[in-house]
Length: 324
Image 1 (cartoon, rainbow, N blue to C red):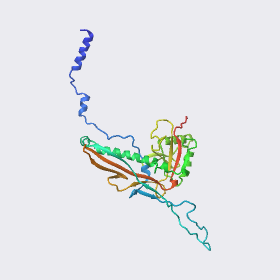
Image 2 (spheres, rainbow, N blue to C red; image 1 turned 30 degrees about the vertical axis):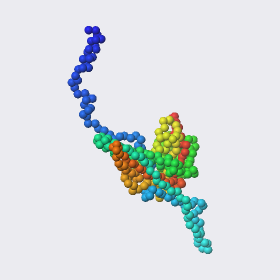
Image 3 (tube, rainbow, N blue to C red; image 1 turned 90 degrees about the vertical axis):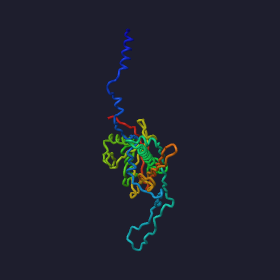
């Protein structure tokens, strides 16, 4: 028999030989597999929503009343009362106060009843879909609190509260200048993680490494005792996660709290299907194709109570590095 034909015959015999042991491929069919819930990499800590003071609204509207700031509100007498008349007057109010009307971030989640019935162990399909959808809305909430054209912090910061970087990169001098705009008990800086890294490099270059503190179980670097809180919602060149090494962004300095006339968050309380502050999930029923629908609504807004509660360091360059 020629060698080639002999080899082909042996291969054919080998392929047809009965496997007389349990293979891993077969055993896998009976294996009990440990699974995880869906991992969603877009979820962030959302520090801004955690650090803001939130004020519940009963009817979805907040009127921000302010005092008129034209000159001194009252004439005062600063001497011993004798034959002098004590000045009279009152503190006047702004007759056209701004009103904040809550509008929801919303979506509809659709789930097949068949999928929910057959494939809900070990994890309930409906619960997981709603959990992930709620995370999406909360991520969008933080984005809107910063960037919304109506109530976002960036859009509503006063012109007098905006500071330009001296050289592009965020230096300690720039941060000090920003503090002069929000000097009444500032709460925290808010910046993209790459902007915080850029500031850290500038501090290292000048031999003044920032002090680290622990806040809510996490570590943050500080400047002048004020923590730098990271968020990717302060965009770099309009992007959440730019791939280039350079780009420009903004850094916010915020004072929070109603008593401090700072920034507060607003939400609607007592809504049907309420899951958390301002978040509602409502089952809309099952259609004639067996598809169940859930309406998810999130009512929130931000309000700057006093003009000097927010400052912005603009045109922050993140791509400056040093060779040591």
